[in-house]
Amino acid sequence: MQEELEEYILSHIDAEGKVLSDLNRATHLYHLRPRMCSGHLQGRMLKMFVRMIRPQRILELGTFTGYSALCLAEGLADDSCEVHTIEIDDELEDFIKSHFALSPLANRITLHIGDAREVLATINGDFDLVFIDANKREYCEYYNLVFDRVRPGGFIIADNTLWDGKVVEWGKKLDAQTAGILQFNDMVATDERVEKVIVPIRDGLTIIHKKCD
Ligand SMILES: C[S@@+](CC[C@H](N)C(=O)[O-])C[C@H]1O[C@@H](n2cnc3c(N)ncnc32)[C@H](O)[C@@H]1O
Image (cartoon, rainbow, N blue to C red; front, side, top):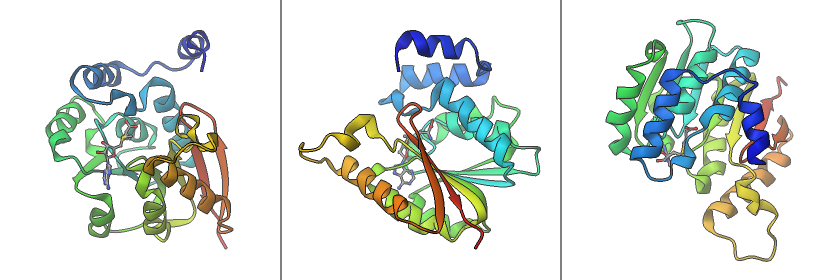
């Protein structure tokens, strides 16, 4: 998006608040690939989705520094609702926990450290919303693993589904991550159990609604 337009949008939407802006800053100062952090616009979008869907239980695959988990938690109706978030990189654990501790919403979030594909089996119950934002090579696996854990009428949101425009760069040699995203997009497109739309915000968000019948 044009920088000027993005600045305009950011000055006309809700502020992210101090906890999140400090977290965003610390992510950029202390971590490799800080662009993975959802950031102001996508963070407000995630919160708005939660307001609209009104989930009781959310699952996130791929915590990174915890920015999106906090945004999802912000949108929840009250403290009886919860976010479970899974991160494979145990070196991030202390950083994530120290920032969650600065938020009044920390009690709504449970952080699980490990491979989402294994950790999922250790978390009981179904989810109203799943946010897929971990390894792009594994999106199809995540989708198949979580599908039966999403209640009928629930939602899956997948991030980075336009993958910096690489999904339409035909002819170039495919790297594994682009191949993973292409395979995921094709799988969702042909899955008749769901309704889906790709929103071209940031790096592409696919919103998937699991039909009730
Ligand atoms: C794009 S970042 C997540 C960004 C975060 N959701 C946000 O919006 O701020 C992806 C994260 O997924 C983690 N990850 C990769 N493979 C994973 C797996 N199999 N299980 C859990 N986490 C994984 C990575 O270590 C990385 O921190």
